[in-house]
Image 1 (cartoon, rainbow, N blue to C red):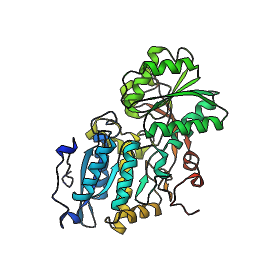
Image 2: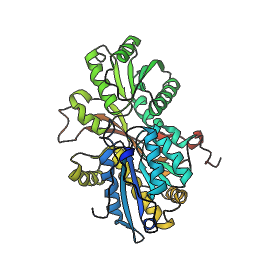
Image 3: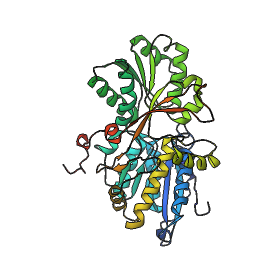
Image 4: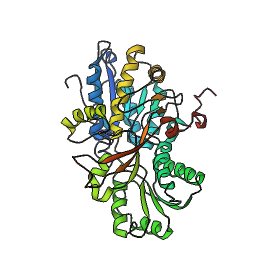
Length: 402
């Protein structure tokens, strides 16, 4: 797409720098897609997120009120300090107006503070921490996708309802994992269950043996995985080697993506219960987007990548009426309109910046049930947005008029 200029940032030292935002540059709306472009989260976000944003810009028409829309991309390497340096440079000298994705909760929490200080906009589609719309909320960002409350509310409830009352957790040792553990513990205890133990592991762990031995020794009915991507896949693979399931323990992956299932294979992932914000094969609208996305990507989109498309389009529609130079004003305009597309069904953005929409409880199909490539999920039930995300009364965001 000729209207899009992409600049890839592999490291901070190799950045392509503008001399400064020229007068001409101020007549261009620049979207910065910030994600893990080559690391453990690159399948669920990465280049696929750039593709989703490109599709949104194309569908919007490629320009805004006669002005060009450009996309640049940055690789934060899963390091908040690199993300912070890059985003500040984008805002200071490269004329970026809005950041999309910001994969990883620690990265996202850093980005939203910077966007607020520059009065730019941030569309957080690639993070889970519920802090983003609680103590870290701001008038300059929206949290667009799923948060830890919605994920736990679906997956944990399904197992609690089956009588699985005792839990042990393997926890990724950063903001996302901590948030998931806290949310899960609260929900389990509220439903007469018990967390008998947990252990934290570093990001990108290859050897889970010591952690799994502790989980096995706990005798918990469920071993919950409060991690994601390669960490989650490695834990599931090694749990099979240690015989956790054969010993009567269930595995519950609290955050699992379509690309994770594809990488593991249905033999290993089958019957996993999960919560998802959307699914590519859910209906005609979902399939229409997924088929366009597949032409270039050769894979179906994750819900993060579907959120990238939906959030970018919603932002552009809001910016059309209020302009894009005032990030706070664009975010306020996004909150004023309902969002109802293939991703955000029955959606609306609350005062605290949280997109509330229907989410879905799904089960990973067995190999025999799968009838075509990427046919991985059976949608079990719909969880209404108000149920999935909880009441705004529980939010600690100071923006809320109470």
